[in-house]
Length: 105
Image 1 (cartoon, one colour):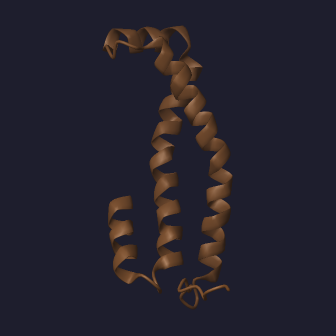
Image 2 (image 1 turned 45 degrees about the vertical axis):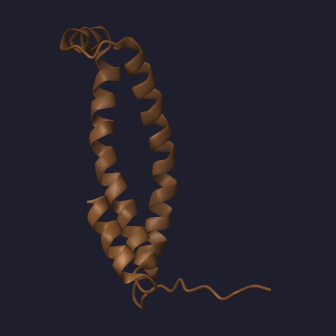
């Protein structure tokens, strides 16, 4: 008793959707690394003060630079993932897909 799915990919977007799926799988490892670094950096700075952040950057510059770089890269990675989801649902749900794209931007 399986109902048919309303989810259809618009013609010509198959490769883009495949790229988006692969992209999402690839950035999963990056997201875990980013989460671990943010937790480690966040435990060193519970006060939220600039002095504590500068002290953390001075004591471990590589961890601070990696955290800052990965945080900036997260926004681009998230946007590409939202484009893939938009392509996937745009034919079946055009209004929801447009809202998702606007909120993802």
